[in-house]
Amino acid sequence: MAVDTDLSQLDATAQAQLIREKQVSPAELVDAAIERIERINPTINAVITPMYDLARKAALLPLPESPLAGVPFLLKDLLASYAGVRLAGGAAVFRDFVPDHDSELVIRLKRAGLLIVGKTNTPELGCHVTTEPRLFGPTRNPWDTTRIAGGSSGGAAAAVAARLVPAAHGNDGGGSIRIPASCCGLFGLKPTRARNPLGPDYGHPSSLLAAEHALTRTVRDSAALLDATCGPDVGDPYWAPPPERLYIDEVGADPGKLRISFSVQTLAGKKVHPDCVDAVHEAAALCAELGHEVTEAAPEIDGDHLKNQFLLAFSSSVASAIERLSRVTGRTLTSEDFEPATWAACERGRGLSAADYLLVVGDLQRISRQMGHFLTSCDVWLTPTLAEPPVPLGTFDRTLQQYRDLGDDQVLSFIPFTPICNVTGLPGMSMPLHWNAGGLPVGTHFVGRFGDEATLFRLAAQLEEARPWVDRRPPICA
Image (tube, rainbow, N blue to C red):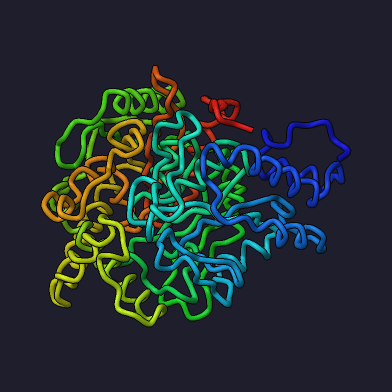
């Protein structure tokens, strides 16, 4: 290694620059990442499937012309298939499933020269806001190992926050990138619906709710990753409006004077934790200092109805996923095969008729139009990411009967803001601009117009420069 640098503290863009300058080799970066994983991962349980040999072999191949070529990366163990590597999705019934092909997203990550060193922990089938699957055990938050790292991309978030790798893949069907980003003090963007490909295995996972992307420590890494993966796949039924230019070119570009509306209550009119209110007020004040027009306002959407219809749509996707698993395993799956939260969602989804489901979709589309009209009066909507800071591990433990009796009110009350982006397909990002008195990160959530990640990246880069967070290190850190 020709550079005297703590590689763990460099983002992906900086690591790739060292490679281009021949100060470090891809193999050295991979070995350094593996050493960090082996040393730190036993404490946080973020990486559940090492892929060291594959990464070391890939590190010896010629690199493509890419801003991120040669950088170690982690793949979430959900949705994205990597040929020859287990894809369990946190489910015991799927623990031995090995796909024989790469998903299109993985193809594009490889094409960009990213070196995948392992797969990260996720709740069973991505069905929770915390990453505590029975199969692999809980992922712990590097800021406080008694607390959740969030879900469902909790393993990815914990790994990036602890500096095991500079960035990691995530996906988001109700906040699953932004929830762990808030819990772990990271930048997490859910792109516009259909910005990234879901094929060849999935058409509309999670009832049009799901999107693929990543968790990063810096805004520029998120932009560079989206440049590497975005765009339609052959045969896609629809795709997001193409960007006017590369997203990395938006980072540092002048956002102009934006109209930013902010809310500190949920759409159902409920109050959230004071730390989350403080985070929004600080972010709103910072936006005003930067010259933006900031006003308090919220869309006129029935928050309770949104919550109920979102839950039905998500539950239908869980039921569909379990039917898919039944086909793959060749046997009928029962409640004995799954955790209580997963099976309760499956039962709820199976209770919908085809007509019921289409009524739910119609309701969500009406909400999308309401949200679209609201965003004609402002450019960005600012809220808390979550209703409270990261909660203790075990907070959401329940029996199947308790989930049947109580539904998911406790879970959805923790994430009252993130599902709106999944319902509408809008881009949303969680930013780590605030830490509470206990030293826990508290995210702020920014929602943009459909297809307009560019405005979010411009604003995010401006906020990152004004209130940098990259040097904040959790107690558990490489």
